[in-house]
Image (cartoon, rainbow, N blue to C red; front, top):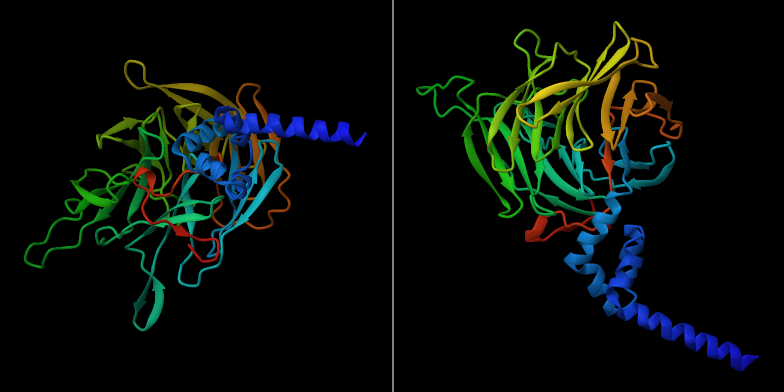
Length: 398
């Protein structure tokens, strides 16, 4: 009996060695594990460490993970980032808490892509002997919440008004550019420049690790009504898209500003008059406009077709399941589903079946400028392909 068991154990061990040395088989097994488990697996042996750390495995894990995307929800803008990973049905799969840091002001998340988050905050400054937020500057961090790594970007140009930013990814995996709009400070009293002439844009590239000034731009992204920090933008089909405020009302979008990875700017007209509660989202690789009309209690969902020339198509128009006194806080899309955060509820809307579902996220007790994004776990470096010195936040703040 004992001899038979020994033979089986020896046979099993031999088979596992065969699997382990066939790295394509081993890689296909490991890439299905959560990233936190992969980080533990690195300590099993040198072969596993080498495999999991390789760029080929990191890219392969990302491709597999993209087919299993979920939502990442940040409901309460605070100095302690508490993030919730939520499935489409509303099940919270994981809660991630970044360590408290007393030298950071309130943080918010402005985008998510390939498992990386872009977080911003106004740094502290001394004004009349008091410590206040410096609203003319932004600290920008690229974070990977599951590997607990973060990169603080170099400081941008001085600005005389709120800077706005947007993040573009690609064309290669783990490459990105950050576009920062700022108002250059006056050179001198004798050489006064108009406010418009001093509006400029600069871009940070992960391939160089530095900022370069593009120069004067005719338009500034519209400030977001739901957040005191960010501007509503989305990266879709190789372009960053922001709203431009209308001439009549600075709280309502009038058109769309876009820029591609080659730093080419253009504008796109909106399909019709929209409302203050309008959002740009990535709907299955196409730019989508979601506009909620409070008085009629309906939502219009438009998709931009760009085969020959830009043309808006009304995807659907439907009644919303909430009253007009309930404000929409944030909207995001994942595959064919749109996620709405209202002042009191969380909803998803299935575009194929025209079906609303209220999510039971009662464990998320408070909201303060909430945001949510489609999210997929990854092992990507925060610094892009150049892979600079990245801050490990396991035992310290971001």
